[in-house]
Length: 224
Image (tube, rainbow, N blue to C red; front, side):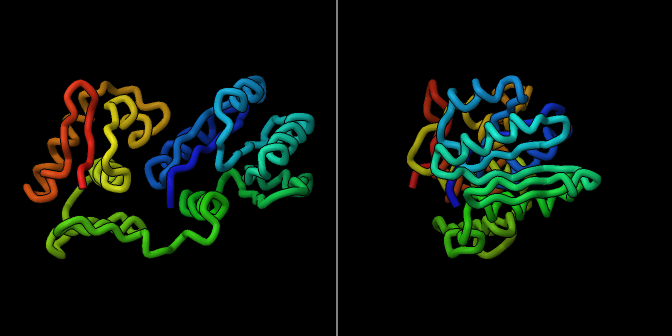
């Protein structure tokens, strides 16, 4: 599965925490928009892999605009988020691969539905297993082993290492890593990246740690 961009359109912030969680679990970055900033959002970035539209308080006109935008750009999948008491009024877009989910659904259901729309047919493939020297990363189960022994990493340590390992031979700035790994609205400083890199290096051992290269004045690179 490769990185995708997701556009979230919502009048409220009720889905923001959920999207932050999903940006950790899935290889996605999320752009936030409101009904008023939808037009600006689609002109700033054109290559969205999914549009998530929270229907709470949204006009039929906006829903039609989102559907038209999807159709005009290769039928971008749309995930509609609705409340249970509004199900009888739900109208799915006619074109493309689309789905809906209840706003109160659990994190696991959100992850499954978004994954099926973003990477159809790629949910469980051999690419879920990444082997580098004596390290194995299972992207499906979020597990890392060294010499077949599990490594005790925190979620953010795992996310940082797996991101770098699956995007090798390219230097990423600390700011980019904060955005791609920590999520779209992380407010901490860039020093947290250095702290996590140091912890990851100490836990995976010298053989794997040698692949994580500090690029002076830029950030970090995973060298194969």
